[in-house]
Image (tube, rainbow, N blue to C red; front, side, top):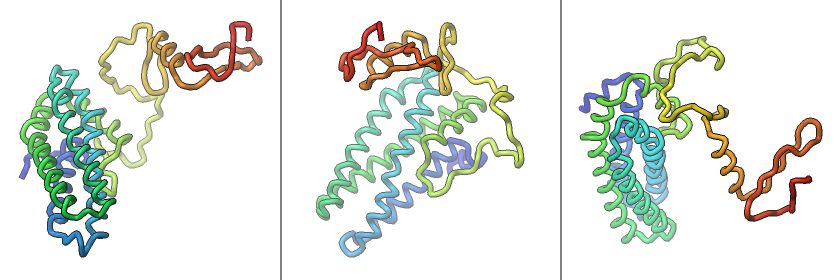
Length: 238
């Protein structure tokens, strides 16, 4: 038994391991199904296995950036490529499911199963143990909050981490938790979900493939963007 399964319910590492257990169970179950005779049962379990995309997305958008802050860039540079390879294998398998090309599908499933088992072994043998040694408790708490936006492979949301205190509510204005940022806040504008430099906002608006005009409460045009592909002609005299 993996010792990290003794972590508190809902801890991101424990959740990754529980998803691995789910995947191995699905792989075992699918392997025992006669796909020709029980195609609907197979298809249902295969769709659940395809939710591994959420597992990958959390690693790529949550875990890897935290590891990079501590100087470990190998997962972002290498494991992400393995994810993309598995995505391609799953895409091929999905096409064969649609075609109901059973001989080719069974061969492709073995490729998918082998690749998933390999990536799970890398997670359990190196990625997650190293992450546990590098990240602190506040990192894991912050990560769990972000994980919620991506989701999990399970039918039900994992237990909260840290556990919610029943009846407790913290208004955002009273949230004093310090969060580590991988950049300086100098000259940055605080937005609802992040901080950007004025020039970054300007470039973002300039290259959005839409025309934007902002009219204030006095019916005065105070902004419009100058994209290359214009829908409506506008000038500074608008």
